[in-house]
Image (cartoon, rainbow over all chains, first blue to last red; front, side, top):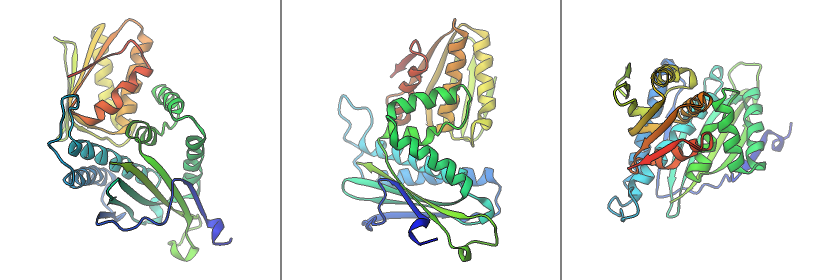
Length: 203
Length: 113
C-alpha cells in the first residue's frame, strides 16, 4: 500500500492549521477508569473549553432584539460542539488499540477551529465514511428532517450530533482518515485508523 | 415522579400537567435516556395536555435531542394530545434546536420567554 492510499480526506480538511495566538489541547488517555466516569469528564472538559474561549468575547453587547451576548453564544456553541466531538470520538474509538483521544481549539480573528483525534477500526470507519458521503452529497435540510424522523421512530443510527452541529450551529466539517503502520499499533490483527475531524466555526 | 442526580433534575407536576427539566443532560446514548423517556410517557398517560418546561435546562446533548424527538413522535401517534414546549431565549441550544422538533409535529406549540 502506498503512502497516499492510506490517507483519505473529506470536506473542508487542511493539514495546515496554522498555530494561532490562543489555542488549547486536551488529551484523554484511554486509562482504566470506567466509561461512566470518563463520560462525565468529557462533559466537564467541553464546559471548560466553552468558558475559556468565551472569555475572549464581549459579554455586554446584548441589544434589544438579541437576548444572548456574543460571549454566551460562543460559550454555548463551543461547549455543545466540543461535547459532541468528544462523544463521537468515544463512539468511534477502538478501545483495544488503547490510544488517546484529543481535542484542540484554535482561536483566530474570524473563526474558531476544533481539531479532534481518535483511533478507530476499519468497520467503524466504513460506517462513518458512509454517512459522510451521504452528508456531502445531500441537501442538509432534507437530510436533517429525514434523520430526525428516523431517530424518532427508533430505526438505526441517527447521526444527530453531526447534523445538529452543521444545521443548527453552522459548523463546517473536514475529515482525514489515516491508516497507521503496523508498527504503530499494539499487537492486533485489525487495521487501526487515525480519525481527524476539523470543525470551522465563524465568530 | 422525578429523577434527580447531581447534574440534572426532571420532575412531573400533575397539577399543572408539566414536566420540568433543570441542569445539564448529556447522558451516554439513548439507553441512558430510558428513565427520562419513561417519566415522559407516564406523564402523557395522565393528561391530554402536556407542557415540557425546558427553560432551566442549560445543556442537552444530541442523544437528548433524539430522545425528545422520539417522545414527540409518540405524542404525534397518540393524536389527541396537545403539547407545549417552553424554552428560554437566553439558553443557546434551545434557540438553535427546539424549533426543529416542529418538523415532526407541526401542531407542537413553542413558547419562548
